[in-house]
Length: 561
Image (cartoon, rainbow, N blue to C red; front, side, top):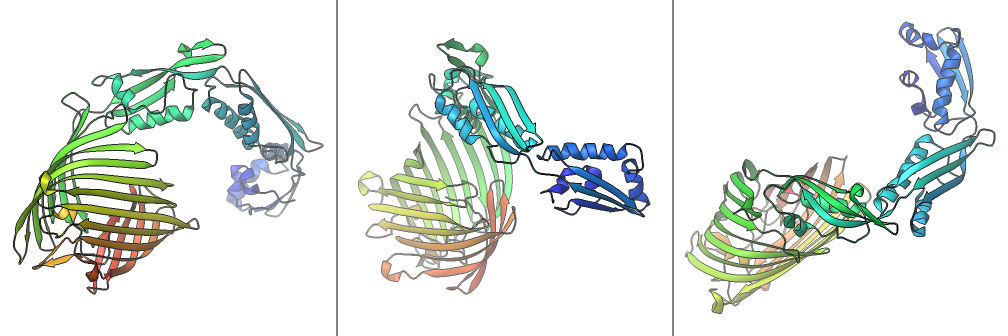
């Protein structure tokens, strides 16, 4: 009778001698070096065959074979072991008992989730995992002091059946108590409370909620390490309900950080940058982030301040920026400042902002001009993806509306509408179809007097591959400037060769125009490579643009917007 996965059941010495997978007979050729290794186990040495049988019997028992038969023979340079493992033992009964003030539905869930049910073959590893899984489920929901009191597996070798018994003490049912923060130096406990949306005093204890609070605090700029625990030793018990403080132990991040970097973008060229960051500006736990980024086609200086969440979980920020660009023979210089409010409501993120900017643009071969605008804007992003950094299945939608008025510090009346769509459709385990669409419309009687940020150009990485960055738009002199309409569509299939590398084929189409009558989609298509990095898939694409007849190389971080 062959034994499933027999190769992994044998001692390492026999495994090293290449037993065929699924075999129940072992034949060993024994030249001098192998014979030397096998000599302690050969049958003619007194007691050695019993020793080998004992070891193999113990290993087979962990897989549910308790009645194996062994037969050894040796001739010339061969050692032959014939093994009949006998019938496999299966589970005939499971008795799971839980003491303490535990709800009937909790016990029912433990029994329903038991990993070694009646009828399944007995394996020691499965038996150990089943006991620990049941204990973990008790510990995760209300019963933070749960213990495994006793367990027993009764094996009847004659009937080849196993009876399993596991006895637990659930302990009291726990409720979250007050939050106690340890390790703070610069910050106050109120800062931690601002980020706490999962652990509330009086609620039933849930391990998942405690872990969620720990993860949230680690994602803030304030703490280098966070440990969240339930202080069961400090609990007070009443009527079988224990209320225990929640202890948050933190280690704060360094108050100042300076970073330098370099890189390259297929859109804006080579880049060097310097950044200064502090999470405690003005000793108020305000996050201050500033930097200077010098790219071949764009130079940017910025400074932003992010405030801690409000009591209603709003994230407010404000900042300023100076930027110069030279893209497609259009030179722009602008400075802007503004404020933003971000609120997360389940899957929906809302960003409300108010910004003012002034811009000077100098198109080659055309007249230079200056424009300014004060723009309120609201953007909504809805996400449902299986992974934020490496999605295989899901949908992301985004829409925004903003505008300016002559009566409120803008040079022209306008309303800007913009929407984006991205969907990930699994094609089996290794392939993904990605669909992407984008539309935009700036409602105004003319594009003149509207800053480029509120008009549309396209082309390049992330939009229409096969064309240079922002090369699709309105011709003004020798430059390409923004138009009032935008349309983009894209389809891409990615096949992952292994866990790290993949290949992609895609087709993009899009254009930016000042009148719908002039809309003629520019098509680009090509092939690309993908590499799964810790920050998400990195892509390198080689694309051909039909309109220009040229080939462009694009680099990207292929994550949803």
